Image (cartoon, rainbow, N blue to C red; front, top):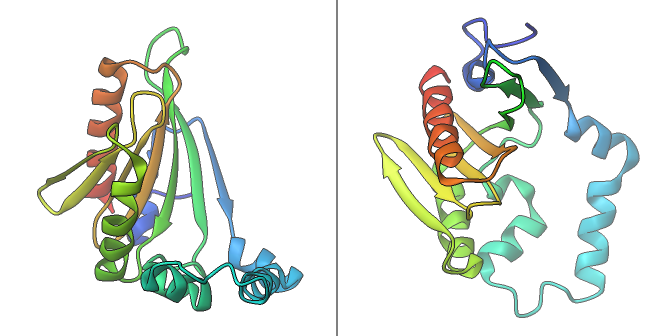
Length: 171
């Protein structure tokens, strides 16, 4: 187990039962390739921010406005949930830098996702169910998780939501 062993904050959301864990430092990749700055420049040059809500424009101009710590590593893991090893989840974990900013983005984008998107709050965690086949976003002050069950049905989505809730409690 690479993470999830206590004291790492958001990384503690990674399941200790994961069969595989990947750690990606996307910020370093973007910095070395200058891809993030190139993306911002092209977006501005082509006028793609025109007509965009101010909140999204602020994210394009400064990714820190997303509320996610894009300089911290992102973890992805796979956990199998049955004895036959055929059911399970894939979950990505990122560090929350500013929950208020993240809430603003989520509140702006969620209505654009259509009627299949269901937002709820349990304790200090926010859940956005993206539809039966599309996964669940869950976040609190420490971590944001995107989870997808490999079999799409209401029972697996219920178990995935519980799994993400438990993960956020560890973070």
